Amino acid sequence: MAKATGNIGVSRREFGLLAGAAGLSFGLMPGFAGRVLAQDAESAASVIQGKSGEMLIHNAKLGVMETPISLLRQHAHTPKEILFNRLHFPPEGSSAWQATTSAPGREDWVLRVDGLVQRPREVSLADLKAMAQEKRVAVMQCAGNGRSFYAAKQKVAGGQWKNGGMGNVEWEGVPLRAFLEAMKLGPSDQATWLTAGGWDQPPTPEGSDFAKSYRIDDAALDNAIIALKMNGAPIPAVHGGPVRLIIPGYYGNMNVKFLTTLLFDAAQSPSAYQSMGYRVPLNPVEPGEFGRNDYTLENSAPTYAHKIKSVIFSPLPEDNPKSGAVTVTGVAFNDGTSPITKVEVSTDGGATWAEADIAPPESPWAWYHWSAQGTLSSGTNVLMSRATDALGNTQPIDGLSRWNPRGYEWNGVEHLEVATA
Image 1: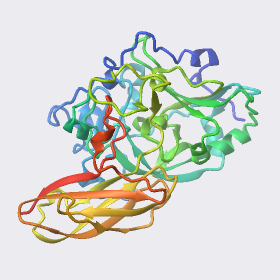
Image 2: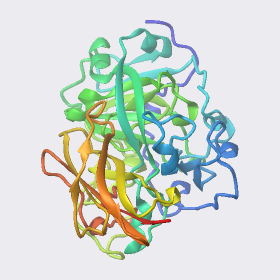
Image 3: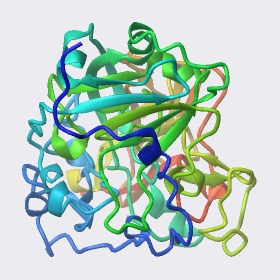
Image 4: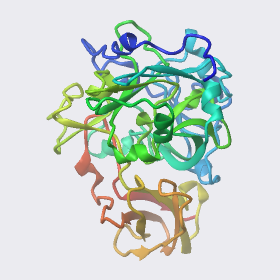
């Protein structure tokens, strides 16, 4: 194995400090502050070098921005210039290199495998590049995508995402299972959890480092890769380069950026981002019944696999459609566990429905493009779409039934108002 240089890896003792949850209030953390900026306040390119000026900024300090659907629909694989973005800590000081769509150029990168293994080891970037690589085309989606739609019941704090907190991306890297076998790690029988840790660090010593945990027997890990490329090029710094864990079909926060550590342990990480953040209540809640800081491992579940979802790509309001016959197009996706078998479309607010034609996806986790015929009346029309998979999972007519205090996992039936020209 090539000699690793630099000091990016962390020791197990240091990795054990990923708790930092004491005294932490998610209501006060920068990542959950929900500071929404007007689009004309700052351009996306001045926040993240290389981003399109048409991106919609939710939080400039953390580089939180989403993609207008009019841009998203133009590409089979979402380019780095318009892919949505979400950083958990401000890219300033020693982290300033993250604020660009250029590759980070960190050839000294080290991935440390530690914990309940026979022998901890460090793997250099050169080592990873020399291993067999595989591609995964998968939807990358923020767990808060669609958060703004929950405001119909009660607005929740955080970036008010519409549907642009997603993209269809081709990743390439080393299959996780094959990597672990090649390392001959021999995890202990007591190791039931695998925790991924990122290089990015909280702005204050009291903050919690970013770490996410997965059960070792989670079938989703069979498809995971230690990614080195995005859309055929080195992963941009702002999107987690040079090394990112990709678990197809999982929400974006579970795909840890700036990957530096894989830790085998008997328990999941105490990181606030695992134990309190990115979780949804196990039971339905109403506004005021469940506080933003009431989440525990016992009363909530992590935002792991994508809920089935569909998004209308055309016609959009800005397309100025005319009354009469119309072709409605869009995409659907889920966690890849079962194929999407049906997409229903309505152009009259749900009074009547037509079944769409669905094109085969590039992979189980990629966009399913669909199209359906309908009719637009003169005036305002409400377009709707609903996807269903082979297991019977479908989008709820009332997405507000899954309202939660952090506005995660929105997948209600798609509604879009368009007025005819």
